[in-house]
Amino acid sequence: MTTGLASLALLAEFPFESVYVRSIIYVSLYVSIIAVVLSTLVSVPIALVVGFTDIPGKRFIKSVINTGMGFPSVVVGLLVLFAVSNQGPLGPLELVFTKEAMIMSQFVLATPAITAVSLAAVTSVEENVRDAARSLGGTRLDVALVVIKEARYGIATAILAGFGRAISEVGSVLIVGGNIAGSEGVSKTRTLTTAIQLEARQGRYETAMVLGGVLVAIVLLVNAIVVRLGDDKVMG
Amino acid sequence: MLRADSVSLAYGDETVVDDLTLSVDSGEVVAVIGPSGVGKTTLLRLLSLSLEPDSGRVTFDDTDVWAVDEDERLALRRRVGMVFQEASLFDASVARNVEYGLRIRRQWRERFREQLRSVVRLNGTADAVEDALEVVGMTEKIDQDARSLSGGEAQRVSFARALAYDPDVLLLDEPTSDLDPRNTAVIESAIETARNSGIGVVVATHDMNQAERIADRVAVLLDSDLTEVGPAKAVFESPEDERTRKFISGELVY
Image 1 (cartoon, each protein chain N blue to C red):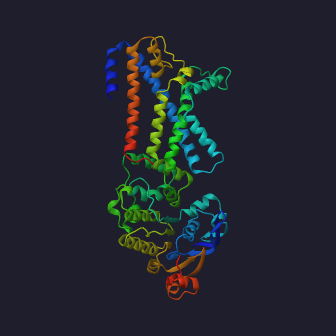
Image 2: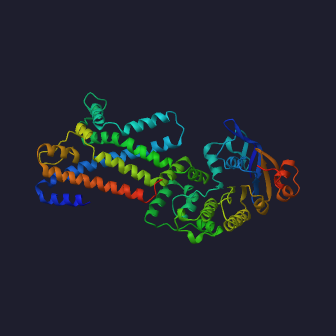
Image 3: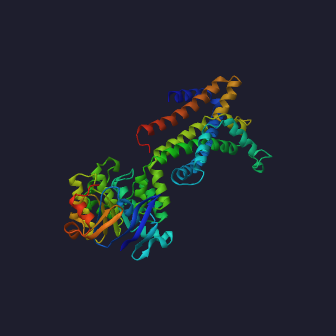
């Protein structure tokens, strides 16, 4: 947290850049949060289905999830860029170098991580708790809601882990977003990570440090919440 | 009221329940006794309408449960309560646990509104919840975290949870086998209360003394086979079946 305070202090010394920095923070948070929210809406149902039903291809889905966790982010960026480029299937939507394209690639990156951790969390909910919900008159949906509630801390950890991966990711957002800032210094698709690499390359180390401090503060805060949830011994 | 008629069920090659017939009426306690692993739990699951028999029929008020559509079966299933050997309480307060059966029977719109109210702690406790907890002597712990209860207390709450939505049938699977004598006595008296309020109770137990204390009728389940079904007194004092006699006298050891 001291890093966060230090970076705030640094920020105060560069008033001329505050609009620039603030807009970059905004883009980073906006893209990562939207991507993680969408990813959660997909991941948790997948985890429930894979965890508790006998659908065909379950092993295949699990191996896709595991492979997805280690998938190189630049390749994800490249694939999303192909998809949204003029010749790609999503070409007509004109999404190249937009926040929406960045959200898409962050979504692809975060989903396997969130699904894998959610899967571990929901499958750790004891069978007798599910039996109890069902025996009390619960429908399949009621039982699923009980499982989500019982696994809430594990799922929260999954979401935060996905967010951590999304916000500190640089390769894919650079490719699909293009690291663009407007003429008044307002970020369009420039995130903390892509800005840091640009500022450092151009020798503006103070700005790079400020941005780095903000990024580290955000990641530390998220990790602190994850550790706190784990410490409470309430997972699963 | 609730009746399993010549039901059979196999898991893979292993026949767990073989051509059994058992029924329970309002206001009676039926004890299913027999050694562990003989199919008592499976029989109860068939009666709880959560398992479909391979053959035979399960009827509830003369409705063939597995011949009707899913909505109708859910409505029938919701008239049954079940308590397991392990309390299996949810990670929430005692009140929220006992309330569960009532809550899921409400409309989604109402459930959503309640969820919002519970966030700002505006919800009171339903009378049915307090009444059910009263039966098992747990009203004082209503606001406690369910996971902080002792094993006996948790089982009592689990009983109240199945009682709160006023089921017509209560199925109890070895409800007291992990409990000390005091908590066992509380559960047995709660079974009595349930019976007196017109609920039909089926209790699986390996404790023959308990069966004799609480049951109106006793069914003896040996080797996936009901060897004897009858009034408790008759079964214990003058069993007709040779295997039952040996089991009751302790000659037959499993």
